[in-house]
Figure (tube, rainbow, N blue to C red):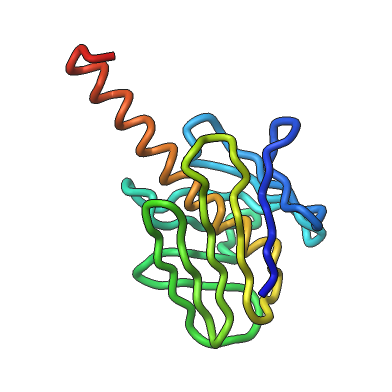
Length: 151
């Protein structure tokens, strides 16, 4: 198992040990991943933010969703299971687990087991999906508090 950390630095998220970066918009519905293979546009695929898709131009190269995944490289089907504090991606004996700390701004922990083609892209897409779900929860909480007058 390999343990990686995603840290925010200078307006972008950096995957420690790699030159890959993740940049997001304020609402975290869109983002961009930069790896050695190039730049990938990220978009959330549904209102609950359970899934994301990464594209080069208009062509999808990666899709994470509980209903089905599309990953780069060879390998069988994959399964994405988001949870409140992270998510798990499983494919043919390989596993990527994303864990968010309870406090905002803390590094995201990524545990990788097995071999993954284009690990940087896959790991950053999984991180984006979990970060986006957290942002959705925060925005909903603020809206509810504002509407009820308790904020």
